[in-house]
Amino acid sequence: MKSKRVHVVVIGRVQGVFFREYTLREAQRLCLTGWVRNLADGSVEAEFQGAANQVNALLEWLSTGSPLSLVTGIDSQSMDIKDNELGFVVQS
View 1 (cartoon, one colour):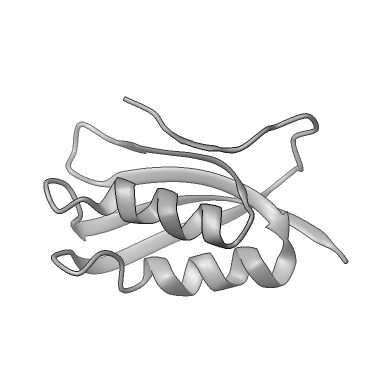
View 2: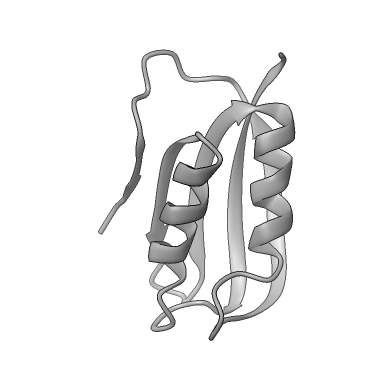
């Protein structure tokens, strides 16, 4: 199966609503590797990789996000796969 990696910035009410924790859980459920973190401007940034269909599933999930979030935009870009990346983590 073809692998894919993306970099995303999620805009809206995405901090203080457990967005990173829910993203971690969803990425783990989809067997993706990568990371997610808050940015100073109130948005959330992430990079993740795995099977293309699973990456696409997380991209779709991010458009809604956690139950208390209100996503107003997503900017995503394809990236090169990173070898030897293990797991998915929340960065501070």
